[in-house]
Image (tube, rainbow, N blue to C red; front, side):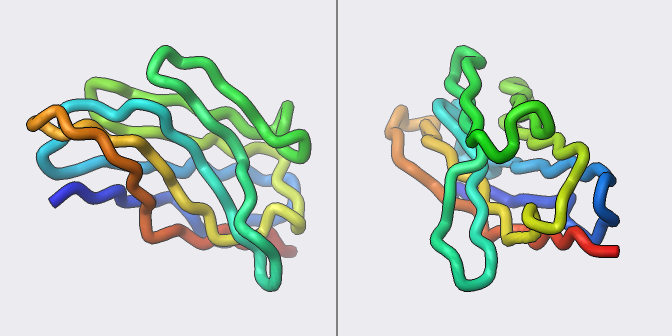
Amino acid sequence: QVQLVESGGGLVQPGGSLRLSCLASGSIFTINNAGWYRQAPGKERELVATITSGGITNYADSVKGRFTISRDNAQNTVFLQMNSLKPEDTAIYYCYAVVETLMRISYPKWGQGTLVTVSS
């Protein structure tokens, strides 16, 4: 059973930082494209950042210059470093990845989400 498990969310003051992690566990061969999405109360889920298997990144305009997505292929983990956090960054953050199993079958997978609250 393949799972994506996020961690690192929590409560932080405006201007603060958090680092989210997304660990792919189970019969994983590798993670291909991956990304972070978020959903604020009453809003649609939106893309935050993506990273390809080769490390090419893409960011939503609202987080450019503040957030950094990265990955550790050896650990099958994707990270999101969030700096200069604003109250409008408050949301549930979801990890997304196209996982390739040991049987070399690829399919998309979502994590369960981790709550980030930015408030004084």
